Image (cartoon, rainbow, N blue to C red; front, top):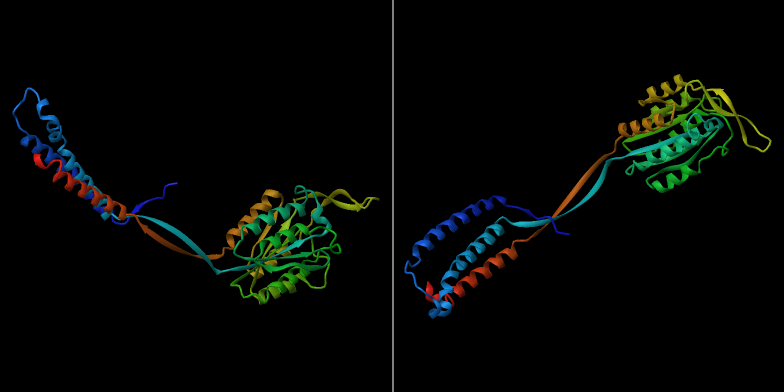
Length: 332
């Protein structure tokens, strides 16, 4: 691989225009100085008939040396660029995930929870400079992962989230309150909760409004997402004898007024995801809304390349001088 060469003083290349002018001047002078006497044969002179014709080589060497000097004055150089980034305004994010039985509904493919985990994983990967934590909630809530910069830990914890780890139900207030507790002592300039649910608050001992007031008190913005199609969805309705779920069509119920209220009160936004693509678009939108300020420092290291050109010019001039005062001395 060749290194990219740049020139610090490229204006010196204008001097190269003098070279064809000098070449034309020498050509006209050389023709004028040539003897006009025609000889029938130069065999009697041996090599003396050849050397005079090689005289322009001396001038050509001088022009090449001059071209090398002009290029050296233009300062050819290569540069090595290294950079270092510094997070100037980091964001702490807690993702509160509903893991109630209704999250197994199949209006999203393969089901709501699996679709959410796939999209959330991509969101986490796109936030390399932020701290992220996970809270899972159903009839109760718990912290799956405290806020951390180690994305591998968060992604592994996300993969481990399944239905059945908590009592069934939808405790939105508990999920939000646990998320607030994870962020209340954060020193980040921006603190965000992404709370997702597919139902109505029906469990827990903390009211969603109370949890929302706590979020406001600690300056935590909350984005809420209602997950589920409009109308009916194929959802778990009972257990089979073998312990698996029996599915049937059920009305999708989401307390949108509550979710909108929480988002508005805390300075966030409410979104409704009715399918996989809409869910993905929502996380992309949140990703754009919450941007981390990054300061990038670039370091440039230059390596000068003019020395070899100066050496070449010196060799050409020395060789021209030696030839002029030895081999071509009789013809100058």
